[in-house]
Length: 117
Length: 113
Image (cartoon, rainbow over all chains, first blue to last red; front, top):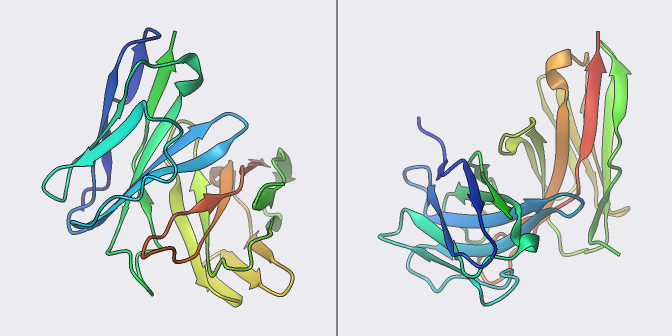
């Protein structure tokens, strides 16, 4: 079946502009995660959605970052007033319901490579 | 100190060699351990998933977890050039119902003909 898809695959933007990154999870997966991968930092957790529960935003680096998930499926990560340090690969992952004993197997999309000039 | 430490490599081995990749961690709350493979400019691909201590085998891959030592390993037997990639260890524990993964920085592996 179809895996996690992300768009765009590459995005170049000027410092100060806003960007939106999109993620389509695997059908039937109710948990959705955003991570950021930058050189020397590895993969860092940003935000997590589970069904209709309030998202876990504990990994968002600043209030310029926000995310929403509409209809329990597609998610959009928005970065406002982009800075050069935001340049990274933004990865989305999905899993089955994330509660005790399940949902630890996360499946990743190909990522969006963001470059802020 | 990072919660998960992983030697970045690069690690270069001849085709057919046994490869050993390792991670150490400091958070004793971690219960779920995963290995991902990531090819250049691609997303991570889940290889192995282990709960708590013990071994798990899948084809040429064996994952080991030693919680007493806070040490996990991935062994690749009969390594192939197609195994050349970055290998990421990842760990999680239940936090309010979520499964945030904490990753190592990855080990770059090259299998040479």
